[in-house]
Length: 403
Image 1 (tube, helix red, strand yellow):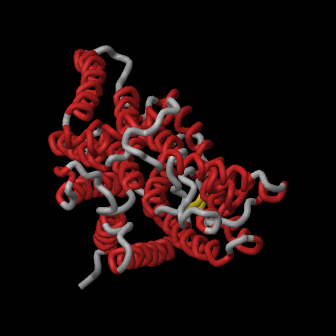
Image 2 (cartoon, one colour):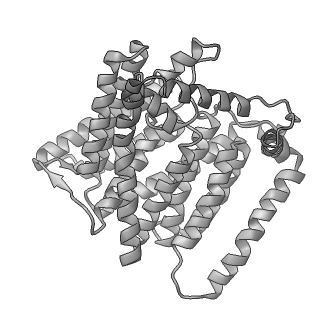
Image 3 (cartoon, one colour):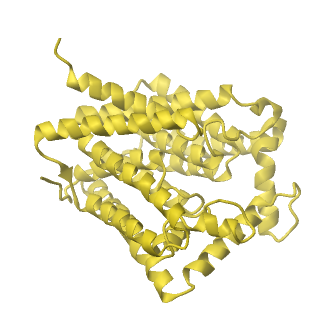
């Protein structure tokens, strides 16, 4: 019996994306299985690519690989070489993952398939969170499928894709809107302040970006409904005991700290983050060499551990990279992202492309959330980076090559 290559490829993509969303952040067997599925998917894509006798790449892909090369070189002068080597091993797999995903997205049907899978993976992982947590006791969801801030972010990325799929009729509208409600609730119970703010911003951007200039009743209704919905969410958070205990009091605490007052819930996470950012900045500007080249990729966590803290990243992707690979390495990570953003904005202006709108929303969300969490070595980040690279290829401003 002849094997159906396309069906096998699609099945591997579906299983792999669901595993990344639901099992990736659980240590042990599930994480090992997720890594194994990614490697299997990459091996299969390499096989398919070899049959085509061409590898698709562009300047942005090259920039990401130069970033990886700088990370590899940083292991030589890293203050914590073992930690840097571990991070480089992770990045090696992820760079291959990015290249394979980018080469997978060589047809419109495959693009639509990946969008659908991301939508359903986001919805199902949200349901998984709701079912397996004790949010109904007023407890914040923690480590059900990973760190609450990380998970809330990827649910937001999935929301951006879901808004696009609803608008383009790629997914059934009833399922799509129900999915948005489920995702929004799971973000709420995650207790992630940055996640909730990102959801509100993403919703506003989606309404604006996917609307046309023509004034319709639906658009007028949306303009009035959005502020009402936001007020309703705020009212529910502040007046519902469960939601207030999960996230409401965390917003109150943050405002108190910003006003120089004592946190009413004795929260220390905000102060700790400020301490991490301060230490990360001081370490970055310590010498001209550290400013240009950093002190070794992934070296902040062991540094923080040995200086009275614990093993943790600095909660800011920009400072984490500046600490690891300096200005030079950080530029090779962010320049392609900003370049793609400009390309997509030009395409949006000239061609009113909704695909470009999706890419713009995803990049803006990435750039905002990078202020609060470190993402450069997360598998989900590379899933969405591959989408952005493909969307960039659809613009008039492109330079796709093959070899």
